Length: 323
Ligand SMILES: Cc1cc2nc3c(=O)[nH]c(=O)nc-3n(C[C@H](O)[C@H](O)[C@H](O)COP(=O)(O)O)c2cc1C
Image (cartoon, rainbow, N blue to C red):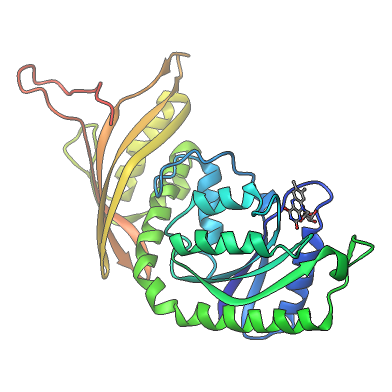
């Protein structure tokens, strides 16, 4: 069954958007052909865009990415602000790229003139994101659809329009499924690397242990030549964690290639933080290569390689390069 996110695009105190989203969710809940869930932008307080596409350094982006990845299609509930959509909604759309691709989207708008101009602009944005926008639209002018300009009382024609909109969004979300499956592996792998970063930041050996195969062979940056098996890999992380009072891990330029049940990727990574002796360190940028296998339906790291370049003249590692 497809999952549809009802995105509530307004965030201001006293917003009318909440009752509009509730109406859409209640109407949608009567159907048996899809699951619906309200996604409130207030639960995803994103700053002004502070990421590069697909390279998520911040927890707020990873959380937003994981939320949007869960859905096959969307209904956006949007007001009109100054002849356009709310900045928070546009920003939330801009934050992601692949997570929107090949999904259906429909619009329920409201405002002085029903929010029609906001939706016209959102349709252009959706085109750039490969979101398939359905034509049928619900527009709710404040003067006719809100009692005393305050309480939503949608006319019957808008109830009919909403049902048609949901029909179309559900149908297109299902029909676009085969196109989405080509990008799903990359999404999953990107999320997998995100979970490795989260595990490192939380010094969570249990969580990290679930991300590697039992027989992982790691050519880590520390000796010995190889760390064979997940226990050896975790022992290595455990020693690194012991050295730090507080730590952070950054990933840059993650590139992934998938093919069936095997995939690989590379990125730059940097462990930094405050050592047990109180000294803060920026750490060093390393090159990391991951090899993945899909085992029993889940991606796991079966090999990784972490290194710094070698200065041939001195025989030492070069640790001061920045990507
Ligand atoms: C900053 C601002 C700008 C607005 N500009 C327009 C507008 O250009 N056209 C319109 O029809 N309504 C406009 N309105 C009215 C809103 O669409 C209406 O107040 C709506 O309820 C706002 O959504 P919200 O209550 O969920 O925040 C504007 C409201 C605000 C707060």
